[in-house]
Image 1 (cartoon, rainbow, N blue to C red):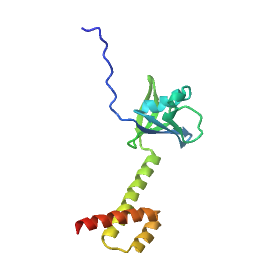
Image 2 (image 1 turned 135 degrees about the horizontal axis):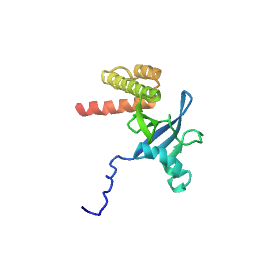
Image 3 (image 1 turned 90 degrees about the horizontal axis):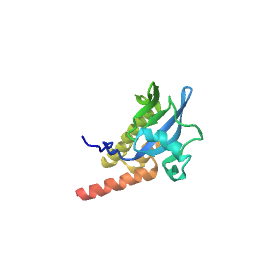
Length: 161
């Protein structure tokens, strides 16, 4: 048997932005965005960065919560999965939860994709730019976004000819 200690496996997850939501009663507030490789880092980096300025770039306060992350708070990973920090007899764990702000954001993103696909589809079908602008405006699509899609569609149609 070797005296050499086994090294832990290298981290393979890319760094990403973790949202830290602090719980107050039944309400949650997006308190921090933390650049980390994992959820544990999302809890630890804010504590370290408050004492060591060289790590401050990892933590972006969203509100003035002023408290550390604790049991009952929720961390959303870069993939949009939410985990509640829960207390155990041996410390804490991250339990996967259905978190309404994440669910709402996903629904909005899906609806936005549908609207943008409809803009492109309408332009390809020959619907007038004016009509597309009017309809897209109802959903909050900006004129410059419609113009960018129109430009791309026209370039693709020109190539096809």
